[in-house]
Amino acid sequence: MTKLAPEIVRQRFMIEGYYDIAVDESIIKDFFQRLTQALNLRTYGEAIIFAPESLGKEGNQGYDAFIPLIDSGISLYVWSTHKFMSVVIYTCKAFDTKVAHKTTTEFFKLGQHETKEF
Figure 1 (cartoon, rainbow, N blue to C red):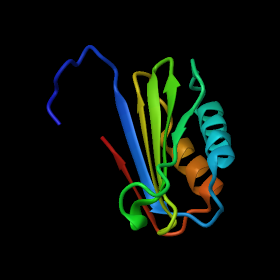
Figure 2 (cartoon, rainbow, N blue to C red; figure 1 turned 135 degrees about the vertical axis):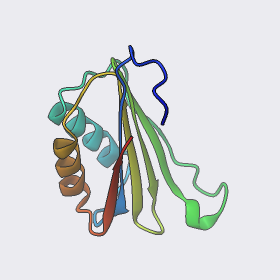
Figure 3 (spheres, helix red, strand yellow; figure 1 turned 90 degrees about the horizontal axis):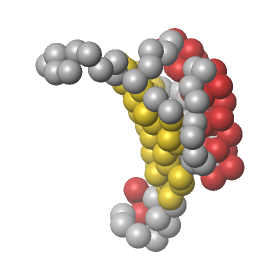
Figure 4 (tube, rainbow, N blue to C red; figure 1 turned 135 degrees about the horizontal axis):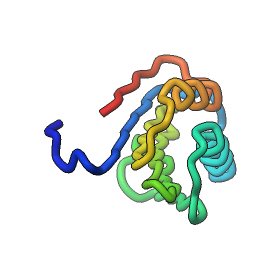
């Protein structure tokens, strides 16, 4: 990425992988609460969770979720059929990616997974 707006602090971290827990809306809310507490990030609203059910392709069924942060937000995407998830943490405040990684992998019991900081 280019060095646009260097005066604005931005940190982005993505974790994708195959999970081994049952995921529903209450689990997603628990995950957001645990992750924001672990990273000392403050929310200013409730989690928004969509489950499009029978809309779209069967293999893409699952959840799209977002939690607004004082310093940006966290997006989570869950593919129920594939037991695959992707979370993107985007903040205007520095956070510890090792803590984000550990919290997410332990919470979702991730097996094979990858991370990217950008």
